[in-house]
Amino acid sequence: MKTVTIYSTSPDAAKKRYKENKELKKELENSNKALKKIEENSGRSLGTAEQQIRRNDQVFK
Figure 1 (cartoon, one colour):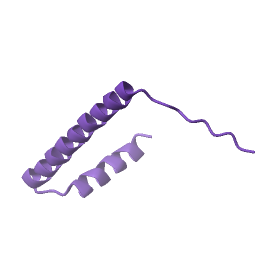
Figure 2: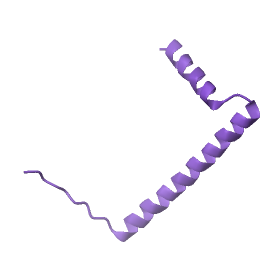
Figure 3: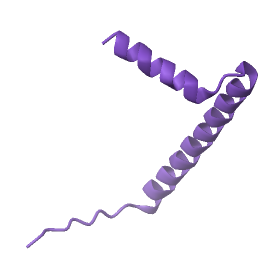
Figure 4: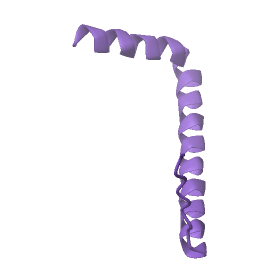
C-alpha cells in the first residue's frame, strides 16, 4: 500500500509562489531576449558559442 501525502497551502503562500513564478518567468524572457540580441549583434550563432563553451569545459576538466 502506498502512502500519499497531500500538502495544503494557504492562499497567501499560493499567491506568493504565483508572484515569484511570474517574476522568474519575466526574468527568463528578458534573458532570452538578451541572448537573441547578442546573437544578432555578434553575427555568430549562440549554438556555436555554446559548443565552444562545452569544448572549453572539457579542456579544463
